[in-house]
Amino acid sequence: MKNFKSFPIRNKLQLISLFTLSFISMILIITPCSKTTEIAKGSLSGTARLEGQTDHSGITVAIYDLAELDSDDKLILFRYCKALGESVST
Image 1: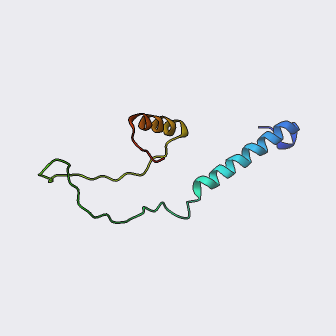
Image 2: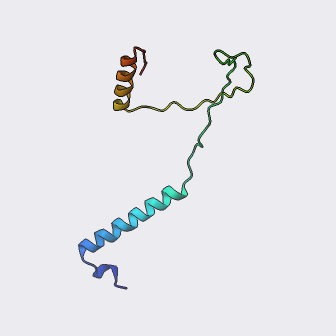
């Protein structure tokens, strides 16, 4: 292996950049996050009924995170609902 002083300037800069990038990458990988991801907790209560049914047993209710629609999807949804005569909030 060559002595560091014998490398041309360009190669020296590349080596220093490589070592610096490697060092920073190792620090980022080794250093743990200071805060773990917390799950928001809450409660929900109420009554679920099936329209037009008399037996309301066995109903499953699921709650999911709200997905953000991009502007093109919102425009399509708005036009579709408007054509049907329904209102939509975006």
